[in-house]
Length: 247
Image (cartoon, rainbow, N blue to C red; front, side, top):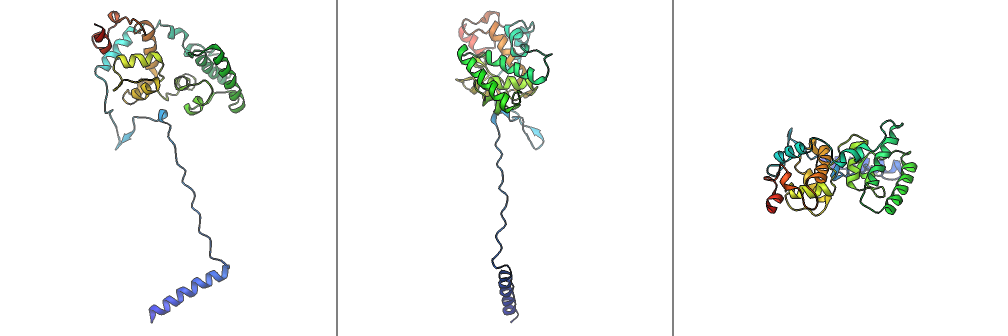
């Protein structure tokens, strides 16, 4: 009997509520959960798990010795990149700072290995975009930088480091790509600078990312040449697999 009355009371209340409003109340819409998309080349690989930094699963043999030897060979800092690199081709006294950042990006675009006609086309297009969308400044993220005409990942990472003081990834050009494969700094042979960048970032400590580009570019300009590398003058001649293959 008590159960029957409770059931009748429940039905009565539900019918009364519907009648009072005329219609059953609409279900409350929950806000959509925004999905966050991570950019691969701006993630920090040294993520902590359980409060400890995870060590890389693989790293090349003798890389610390090889890197120390390259530092010794590059101690004079007299390679072309040391005088003509993007870090030396902008006016540090030009106000405001956005002008300096634009000069950094412009120098990087001018140094690209494309025909001059293409460079002019890209520079004009990019300059128009910067004026319209960024008030004459340059973007402060890799994603926005590589979206500009004529700007690739290497330029973007260098622009982030030089113009914004942010290490977003390793800038890999033909020199870094070549040397990394010769020293076996990649677990497998890579076929493009972007593959090399991904491979290097998987094991190279992040505090070395900003240094490695200028270090290896100058080394590639002076010693580890594309054709006829000067292996006999290299301190890594006994540690370099490529040099051993030429012996």
